[in-house]
Image (cartoon, rainbow, N blue to C red):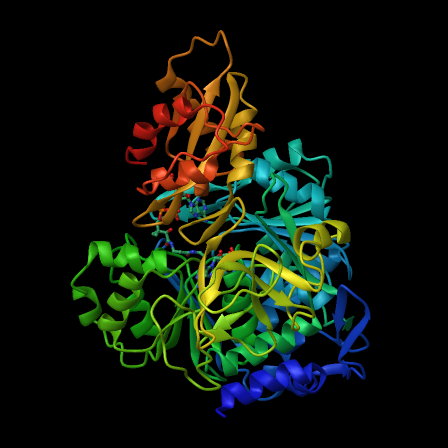
Length: 627
Ligand code: COA
Ligand code: AMP
């Protein structure tokens, strides 16, 4: 039996022994005497009587242990032409100082702080400063518009919001402050203060009494020390798209998260102290939380924070420059980034101009890795390309090729095998386990390993309803797929209304709600259709109310703009078709799956449940047209 098999079996047979052992890699104020509290299923708690501090483990302990002068964070920003390396000692000074700022503004353990920032080191500093105080951060992706920010402000009820004057999208300056002001205007909850980082590219107008300037506040702050928290206390809330318009506030605890992420760096990512890890994502997504910020720092690595794109900043060689310049050992990004590079530089000319000899691994996740991109990346780099599957809820890989534990034989199209701790099953429509090759819902048997969500923010009922009630005893991932004879998992896509656009998780249900709010719209449907670059993009279809006379083109443009204004440019909805009717079942359900199939080029039969086949016939040519 190989090492992977041994460890995997042990993790399921004796989770307490397994994770109790892994917990020794973390510094505790009070070592946990209980590893797993199973007394209240389906709610499980890891390390319930342990106390620790995540920031201490990510920063202070490395300084204490003699790594103070090692690079902790490399900021590389082609969009501003700047960069900076922070050693662990420097990062500690910044974080302790900013924790002092937050404390001065009244932030204490358990208080929420929303961070709405571009990819600047201050975003990482703010996250760690919250962790230091035991405050709960909620980072909101910069590509979300004011309304999305407002929804999160209302749900998290932050005492303070930390933001910046602007972000930079290639060469376009995106002003954040007007969006923040607007969000606070429309939210019911009003944060007491906003701390604003003024960037040279845009000056933010400050609201007297409420807004505080980052630099001047930091200059006068008294550094704050780490506050011990219970392992089960929340570290952060990260909102993610569900099937409805209301995003789900995924909660992460402190102790289980630190133990799991630390373990994953060694066993999945095979990257250790002093080595350089680069997750080319955004701190606004879970990949950024886990693998730009927490995991590499918990493991004493050097992490890269890259404010740029795979292409256009300035060209398709940007990733190779960063890898070579900073000595990156492991690169983690979404397949879309590689598709973008491949499109501009199919022959890989740029890669040849850089010394990539230090790069050992390419990890890809966030969306399905298509075999062509997999092969292209492997041929170009000549290193293992590791497709791995996970989600915001779990916070770290569910299925992966565990490079540090034991590299497995790879199969294109499969993210390989379940990671120790995850008892992954595929259930058929009747709830029974599907056999090899049979497609079904991918679930994980409870308890989930440490690091996974203990619940949704102040909404245990929704947590149970969304993930646990359909198959009691199992966590529903929302993805469908199958396992082969060797136990390799194949993830075929979401089985709900969630779509993946350039590795960004979005809800078509939410987009429908926005379109339906337009006074001219009687009903609508949004579906995800295949896209060569982004994997999937949304397309909208609307039926107008009787008597509406507006020109379809003008209305369509208005609706596209409405989505940009309400959700954000990141939604990437570029086309809304005005149609006379939507195909429905006799019970009135819109046949979205059939529409999606036709849009994706499948020869979809007319469903027997359809109310009026003519509606589908009329829609076919529109669906078949390029998105
Ligand atoms: N702040 C403000 N706006 C943002 C933003 C941010 N942080 N991120 C994206 N946007 C905007 C973009 O500027 C774009 O606006 P536009 O419609 O006005 O052009 C829109 O949102 C859509 O962005 P995106 O889907 O990223 O498309 P793109 O065409 O700008 O770039 C890629 C395409 C492939 C280069 C880009 O998606 C990418 O780098 N992907 C890598 C994958 C990744 O990082 N995934 C994260 C999860 S791991
Ligand atoms: P997010 O929560 O934003 O990380 O998105 C998680 C979703 O992205 C998953 O539920 C999957 O649908 C999809 N996903 C992530 N990684 C993969 C992968 N390696 N292969 C296929 N789909 C993936």
